[in-house]
Length: 131
Image (tube, rainbow, N blue to C red; front, side, top):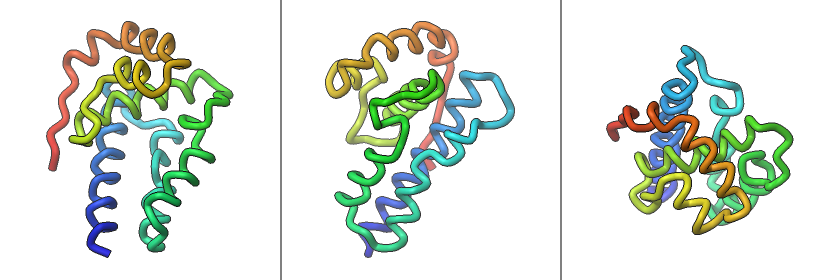
């Protein structure tokens, strides 16, 4: 159970960072629905005491930012936000979006380069402090 508590804290911190990053890059006061619900399934399943390995499989199968069948540019942007915000909240994932794509998602490297270039200035001023 204590392992799940740590995992829940880890996911909550990541969700907070991704929401803050989206607002910072888009210069909007509100988050998109896809970011509001980002990784929420993981939190619910962890609270039901389902194993983290099973949760990861379920999450990657159903989440548009993981599926590889992107219906909208917004889904690619969600993937970018996920990759980019991880370095602020996940010590085990310190890479920027381009590096993450190079290592794990080569098919999306061009998209990660596009978003990195588009938001270069905003990314240079983004800060997130762990709670």
